[in-house]
Image (cartoon, rainbow, N blue to C red; front, side, top):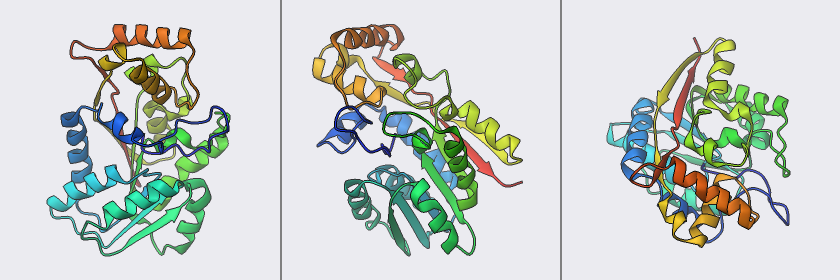
Length: 275
């Protein structure tokens, strides 16, 4: 999940990606070979693009990786636009993207909801590619976790307007992620099944590509700190879990994780193009 695009309340609120070292603590758990397979797939999909926009890209580490792969396959980007609401994430993304040989890097501080129309109005034609990594989880979501379905769907509709090809990374209902949470912290509209069906009904060509990614969780059975961190991450919550919640979470981990201590997020790439 690249960016918590919901402002935190004084208590509770969305998981805080910008605490010190949180990103590193979470992403160290991601199975590296699986992650790079996904990056290779995306890199191949975008290697012919000249222009690209990433919405809700967090600190830019994912975009930096997939652009690096694409450029290794011969891609030459004349323009990359990056949209992210958090100042810390935007600053880190800027430092990363400046390391690449890109014609122009354009940064927007905000969300798709606050900046999408403004960006559309300045374009003569859409970007060649739009990349959205897990950001659809936060479309239409308010600080109390409630989702406005009309706003959610309006944001989905904007994606193929911004990019001739829209690549949306999200997970299916059967993902181990959803088996671990107490309840879906986002919306059932975030499931890849809904996203695929939504765009097919709108008349788009839709391709669904499996990019299963394993995530190491066994350390949460040994360390309370790690268990708390993972509980907050999986439940997209800034609050501390109760003792009963933490115990139930660890019990689920024991049941779901494989022999190597991983659960499978089962991410998928929903690739949307105009017919």
